[in-house]
Image (cartoon, rainbow over all chains, first blue to last red; front, side, top):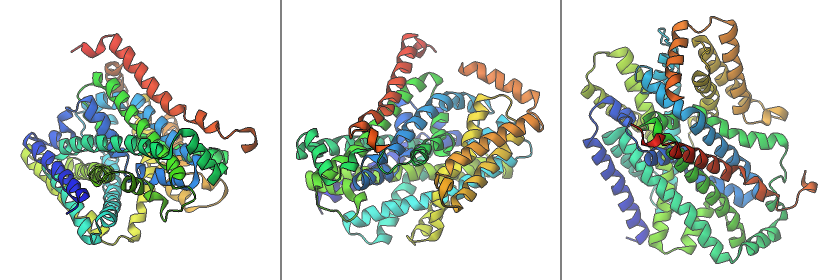
Length: 485
Length: 40
């Protein structure tokens, strides 16, 4: 057994151990779904970041920089600004409002309580969308994790898939939100260290920064130019990824779970510091990688991070750095898995099927839901080419455009009505699906942008010209608003 | 757009990212100085 394998095994056992510890402090559904709103600022910040950033941060972004140069940075800029605005505008308001709105534990729960929607349409619609997309999202993440295992250890794909899924199921099943958040915290630290160490050591191997830019210019001078081959629409389209943050249920859950409103400035600083350092690390891994490999071509640009760790580090350190990629993948999957389970447990079982269910029963329904969704997602992932997994490409834009403007408006505007929220959500989602199916000209713009605009406009217009928000919900908004000001 | 830009242009483009960290830091500092973090 080599050093890299030993490192991986220790890492996986560590994750399971965290699950067991979290199991011992999980007593009720609020603990299982939201950690009893007890997260400190560090865990909140890193778990929000690690849930957000999947393997893309260590594989996709460095690969894009390596293959095309600096014109790929726009997506990173858009994401950093979007995440900051999410921390600034949404985090404090959502933390206060979800607790005040009948202690809402999920996003559908919040929407129903915010608009006093007794038809349950908002809850059911949003919970179904979350359940459906996150099951596919989880499945697609499992495929990525299994491919990594397969490539690193030469394990058969199916074995790799079930080992990865087994570990995630184990700690999520046992410890729920606390296990997911604590493992995300550790995984976030691993990702951070890997993205700081790899570009620095690669830079030292190349020489100086001037050597890097000279080598990149020698390969292709356009690689230095962030505007090369970029139209204004292209730049806007990449930066628009940042709009997705306002509607991602697995990230918003972290804001809802922070211990106190007073911890948010610290969490925001840690979260943004982590994210920007990570994005810079990924950008420079790809960029300095161009200089390191020089004219030499590598088969798959997305493997640039993996190749650098294997070439430049001792197998033991390389194992830790590779575990960071697995950490990035797992930290996203576990959060999405738990949010899907929450939709079943809180939004269907507790609210609609069995209102009198005891806390103990609900926690076990939550655990069972995790198990069922994870098994379905894993079975879907056994066919790595499954066309159903392409649905994931709708997810970031779909959540961003359907939920994002509604979450923002519901926290910033007292006049948003229940119909405004409902029709806005539907209009945003439909726009994303229709826009994505078109190509050429304006339709090349990433669908989140038109979806976000249409959702917001419909929500505002329906609220202004349709049946207005009730005086009760407006009064409730004013009462809660006084708490976060 | 390329003609008006030097290859070093991209250095400037990285400003928005550190800027959001700086804004987060200032907001944290204001919060800390105002003593709100010690309440409750």
